[in-house]
Image (tube, rainbow, N blue to C red; front, side):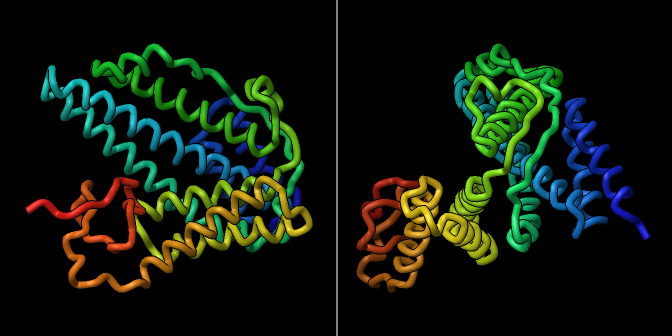
Length: 291
């Protein structure tokens, strides 16, 4: 049977991959570690490290999808074929974001099942390839970006989100984001608020009972962790999200009058509750269907 020393080996491989800037490889080693050693300290750290990568991947994929779509909108008036290719890129990154949120859905119950995630961590991150402002600006202007530059932009966007997320988790100042080692105690309320937020936003786009339930459990955990500090910022943020979820649930339970069938969202044309002023999904002001 594998012992504690065995658990340290795959975790070490994962942290070495992080230091080398090989994030896909690091994620794979962390997944192996927490799968094979779920009850060890190493397994818990691997679970938390994998979470950092998944959240950052989802955030960066959404940002990249937005950048490519912005470029496509500019290119539309100049070159139709280029705009079409850029739209395909945007959809590809949206798919990557969905894949990452799927990983977050899978990993969140495991984190919620732990007695504590407030680990003291110390690790290095390979930060080569952080700069890609030139590529980002070209893309925003509608220029086509070749594959090598697109890969550079993808790495830079991931690094920016990953380092920013670590700084938030450890409560580091901005000037420490780019310095190794990354060390400190994981702020559990911040982690669970982040997970709840990602799940909540994903649920606005594609509602599922599982996502809604997991988001609520994350926010409820924040309330448990901050029960002794009623005005803690993380607690107030969790309360705000829970209030939104309760309001939406109540609104969904309110029957729509048949006479209000023409009260619609201007974005997708879907019928809305006549008591609502704005679409809960798009934020657009509701109005009567155009005849």
